[in-house]
Image 1 (cartoon, rainbow, N blue to C red):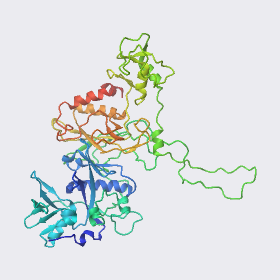
Image 2: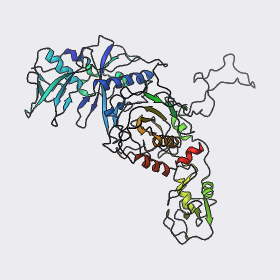
Image 3: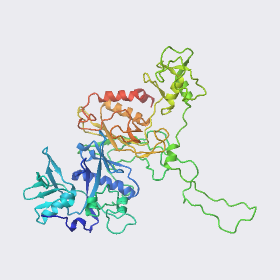
Image 4: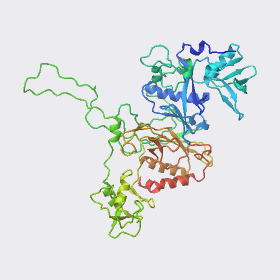
Length: 572
């Protein structure tokens, strides 16, 4: 019986390349490898994104798994947090990346699997597969997995796995498939010798959570991919479209702040489904850029004093060039944008003051309109009195004007007003969506229920950032889990109309907001904002996919509730 891993599990790499295996962790703490095809896609994206920063700083992008396997469309790997994120449920799982020699089991496409209770086959984690393959190659047909943290023995002769405590047996099998991807190993700057799982390698390599079972073993060696040239060449089918949401100062002047661009978030390679052609739309908008206040120079941060004899009394001192420090990300986020109208003036724009109050309640403060506003003790105004009553000019619903002022000041203060009774919108409603990018693609694959047309793919990408004055906790960081997020529409007349209205909603910052996730409970994170999207393409198990014959009508109603209607398209 083989009891302990041989020296090969801790050997030194003699080759500059290794095989990369990506795995996710289930709720019981067990790791499961992605298929070789999916791992190849993940590794390609990881190398491109990692190479752009050469192991320095946090990664700004995520990896949509549906591009490699349509059945994984709901899942995205969020590289900054090393988690797998499910878009429709919000479930997050840890992911990790292991490296193996080219002659290992993953390098040869060998996977060992065990038979589960439901009759499906489940792959062992990659290090177990490699260990089993090594022992079998040495003629050890009874292998104890205790050194790898498992209470099982595997008998190659009978193809069974036995629990050493309960003696329960399961069937196992050895499968040969495509090899896992080969990647390049480069030591990070300042590190000599072989890459390992020490703190410097981990912080520089960013290879995710490391299990204590394999500390300083070959299965934990992080890779440092070759930096990609800035002008990568890729085949592009047409052109693509990117939207910046609003004229707001960006974080482009901040140190280490992510910059917006109109490049493909998947590193230049156009997404594809099977062999179907994919087309991108042609309009492109760069994200808004903001120059920080104050003077700055392109030179170093230190100022050089003039040399020579000391200044005599009464002489004019020489001018010393000084570089003003750049504002921090927090300062820029809190700086605000274009001046907003005075709240009292907004109320007066959309209301008509009544000389005699109607005999009814104000539905904001629940007091009679004939008495003082219930918000008079917490809302100050120099132009609106505590007993002033008015009605909105379109819908004619009446309120205390001070109550409307309090409601407006508690919102986005964007110059628009929404009737709390009938939801009629006055002005142009905008939201608090953080800065990001919206891209649109088209390809010739049909959605279930829309077999007569192709598909529109919308990709939203929002990076982590700092909350602005319009957000719940100004100055605090916010997270953006699961981006880029992919959504689907049928490429027919109604689907294209919905797309155009979604573009308007995106520009008005209405698609997302910063708040608390209803699925994970996480605070200060980017969440959907009451405009439903379809995030699954080929099924509707969770209600977020197709077929759904009522979806397009429902989303049009949701857009209208946000003030986004066909009239907005005529105004463009």
